Image (cartoon, rainbow, N blue to C red; front, side, top):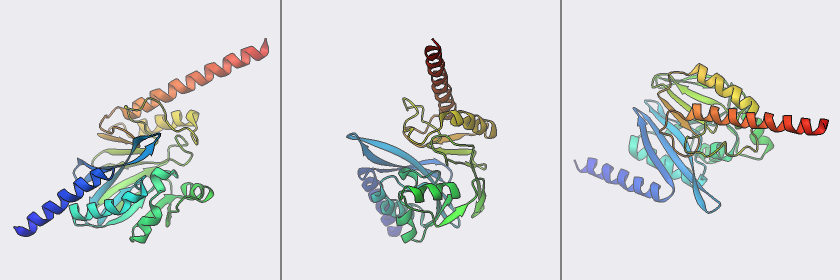
Length: 253
């Protein structure tokens, strides 16, 4: 009894501490959890969503914390809540909010994975590198939990992948999918919006039965986020075509 109470208060303490330290953990469904870290953007805390799943063989993490100071608190919180260590982490593209914590995770014995494309982009931009390279379209089975990675084409980033958990019908989109809370497409510094629209069509066609769709930033509870992303892309590409047409007409005059 006393041991159970002790564990309960430790978990409560860690939950409060992580919330105060800009790390939030929310239960999604079954053995799946969304964790959110924050980075100050123009004076306002801006959230990045990531995920982990608990299996008999350990915890599988999708993407690293954006705030690298939250890597150790996250690992400690997972251990306190579930009694298990994080055994692997997959990055969905090369930006800091997905790969920033790789070096710290490796120091704690976590196997880190990325595609070859992500690895090369991290190398070119002096970002932390994954220890293991995987094919862009790979099926994993960890502790009886099966999931697959899928590269639909360039979008938010040239290397972005999505991850599908068929048992629970969870589609983790990372920054490829925009939250319905987002006012636009966000950071387009490495984006290809024409390809992104086509890639979004592929993802919608491949995973039409998703029960949970997790975007990379802001609110993640709305199942309409993928469709919303597609509509944003259609609008952006339409405006781009109209602008190009008007510029062409002006040049011909």
